[in-house]
Length: 196
Image (cartoon, rainbow, N blue to C red; front, side, top):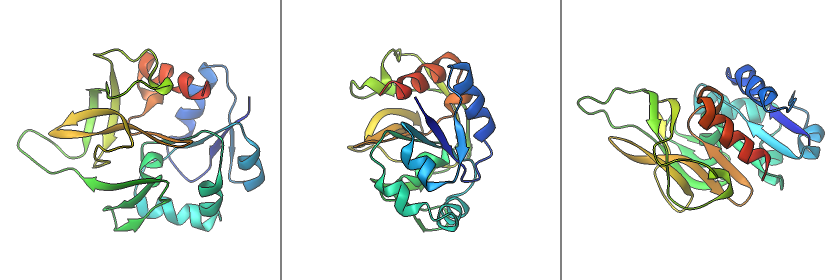
């Protein structure tokens, strides 16, 4: 199985690559359109802001390529948000593969923004990507913007209000948390993605 990590400048690329190596997969880091198109699985990692993330994809001429892929594609953290239609962060149009609007968390007493730390991930529907996810399983989050729940939500997390922790539409999937930093739960969900 060939897996590529899209080299879109995310600072979590190394840790995602290492997490895949622990699962026995040596992922190729690339921005080459032919390599990405030929892969069995594509992962779009990302840490940072939506504006620079989309600018990097445009600079690499990868926007239309990402929109045309037919194999399973996984966006991680910012990568998940870039799969959506629009982000409030910088008022940026994103890849528009999942019809969701990324919104900033509302600040409230006792709720720091960014949301950082371990939180429970609750499956909303049965899906192969969530196989083995327990009712009390937690994942590690670091983010100030989130995708509201909607038809695209496979699993949600509560932080003041419910938001999408795992999303999907057609062959595009996203995880808001960092599976590479989420111990056994993250490893299981990455393995599930590789098995799609």
